[in-house]
Image (cartoon, rainbow, N blue to C red; front, side, top):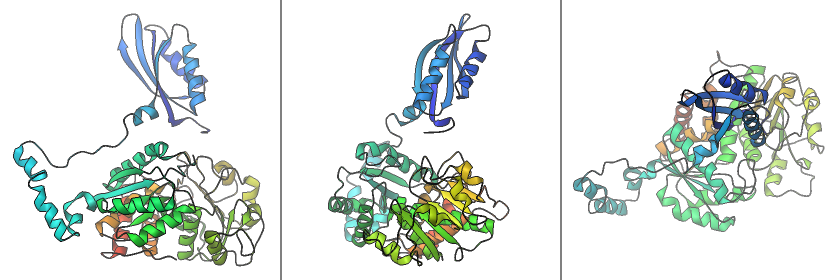
Length: 469
């Protein structure tokens, strides 16, 4: 639940008020009294006696939005005509569409775009399949694939409910990197079925973006698809998050004048995101890391380790700490949370080392309240847009895929991920760098191009396979 009014719960109330007197100012006062924020007030129609007005305001949640409407309705002589939820209005009919890039104004153009002219292009591709990248949408198209099992912070809500999120992802691909992406929402959570389905649709795409698939199945799905396909397979929940965290941590450590190889890092979360973040931090030079899940620290002595947790135990926690998260945080220079809300408090952050860095990335409610963390940490980042230093995957995945598609890469390597993180960090200039600015805005014009250039250069033409740390 939002703690302050948010555009995510923005409503427009169409109402009628008397034309004279203080009716308009009463509307604004009513919204503010209810704790909302007026963002627009438009006179829709005007008459001698009545004004029809659209009042747009931000609320904290749906209950708060209703409370605002009730407050407006309580004003004398105000008549409510309609209440519209602006977020739902944005989603009516979906957020993306397909449209032709070529004109189809006459018979000549139709015969070239479709039959009989298209047959010549099809035969050329039949002789040389590589021409599909040059002569079709394959060169600039990504499949955004989900099974709906781990959607945002909502859990296993299914493929239909995942579709609005995947549409949004596709819209971001287009907006930030000019890539045509399409949602593929699968009505199965069987690993074999998912792998086979993606395998057989892959010829129509230049890359596969796996999205919101729960761990540990996501690890096997990604691994098997990389072995089967000759196009990049990228699980954004893992590697997009890892790129953004490493970029942000690179700059945060510059602010506090510490080196990644010398700091002690405590992580909360050993799922898809946590696993990938850990691997990239280790590849970047981190040496002293403890990872905690809901049972406490991951260490070699635990008897519940699956393959993923076993890898973590073998590559971290060299001293074999076996306590809980709070104990692991004591004396740590860095905390990275990709787990659950409210698992730490201000007192826990106070036990960290001087000039501590706290990344509380659980969304929408972080592992520790940002204001509490700021009392004791030098740099704080979250996944939220209402605080500085938002760690948002849109900083990474559009540019990563732009670079992969431009290089006609057949896979993704650890070196590409490191290059992407380095390029993203470098967008923040030394003059701009500070405790409240360690990552650029998602709307910074250089983000996608810088990341794409780094990935393209790292690919060096046509990459094959995936190199683990």
